[in-house]
Image (tube, rainbow, N blue to C red; front, side):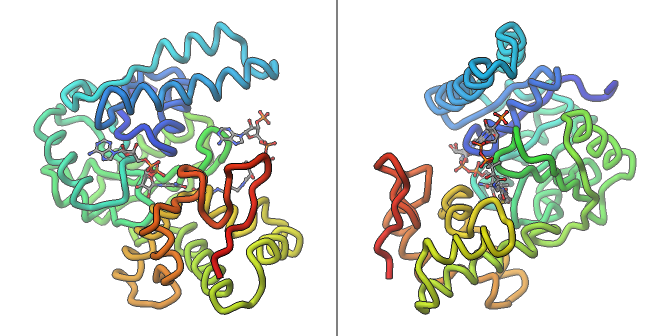
Length: 294
Ligand code: CAA
Ligand code: NAD
């Protein structure tokens, strides 16, 4: 694509690392920024390991892996993103933190740079309002695990320029993804429907409807979902899910979006799911074991 050559990614956690990987895989010069050099190197190390598995399986040539990694650079300095044509933000789900970064980048990047957020539940307009380029702000909402999931929700606000939206849509396609067009409502399409389902599962568990394993098994075998709601919640990250629940409840004032008390207590105790080793399941052994939560 003519307009986009250099991509900036903010955050190299679960989502940022996947987004950086798919951008570099599609041939873009990609620079990913984290809070420290140590954190960014850890994230890039994870990408290298993931690609190494693909090489071992014979699904990726070693030279293609090396070329991909050659297009990927880490930094802790926000100024290093000043020459990017698009910046995709995937830091923690917190509007103040996101807007602090957008304000700084707005002063650093040239006028043509497109700003895109991977937010799960915030509105894009609430970020666009922090910049002097609201017409160049879109949502690019990827799904976890990014290298595997085909969908990207491409989100336009009431202020997004039509040509900018088209560029973002074509960019998503150039990553090998299947984009859909979404309005700028909290949760877009997928999380509008998925988040209440995940919160309902936690409420059902708290009310003693069935065990963690049986609720998961029920949804897997009864509906064909690849993961039950608790395996999925642990996979998304319970800290992130809790923040999403707070934001969506605040927006819609509907109980089904609210983060249930059990989820809040788990987050207080550092049970963040797979990323911390404990969530609805304990991941310390060979096989995940349900936690004694109720
Ligand atoms: N990162 C990169 N690749 C991964 C991966 C990861 N974390 N996990 C699995 N893969 C790859 C594997 O390497 C494998 O690749 P190959 O076929 O090339 O060998 C492929 O995915 C399939 O993996 P497995 O056979 O090990 O596992 P699986 O068939 O059970 O699939 C899964 C794994 C794709 C994650 C599947 O379980 C699934 O689709 N789960 C549901 C995921 C989901 O719903 N995601 C959305 C979460 S909500 C969200 O993202 C939005 C939000 O805002 C919160
Ligand atoms: P994560 O906790 O795995 O990673 C967030 C990263 O942001 C961390 O590595 C952290 O160091 C970094 N960070 C925090 N403050 C920063 C700052 N000021 N500058 C740069 N980096 C900073 O979280 P995640 O799951 O990758 O989620 C990131 C974003 O993607 C959130 O907005 C989330 O809602 C969204 N999202 C998450 C999922 C999911 O399944 N987890 C799916 C789609 C979208």
